[in-house]
Length: 147
Image 1: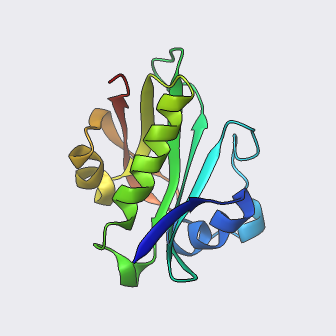
Image 2 (image 1 turned 180 degrees about the vertical axis):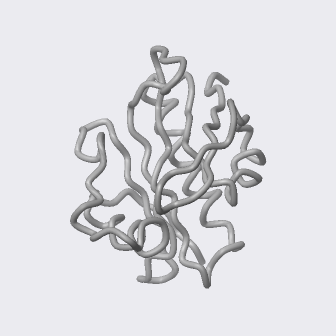
């Protein structure tokens, strides 16, 4: 059974590196907002094994900043556990956290391979696809958080 719980920033970095940024070192994956008190890092556990991680932090939208913007980032799932619901469980926890802290919109820079996942959660693509060096095609996506 998958369980989700908050973790320290350092806990998310190894899976973040293995899945999302294998060309970088774990110690280089301290991102803006990671250490802010309002930031939430979560991990999905299968028994004691971390199978997925994600982070949400207060950060203005890159093209239309507004009060209450929160950025979802670093969502990574171990390849052998994809499709078991851990990503959705993590995203639910992140969005709930942002709402509880005055969040009005969540946004992300989504890999094209994750676009359908975010769309199932109500995120809408904004603008054209773009390339991130060493990572591939992405699109900015966002969703409103008001109830």
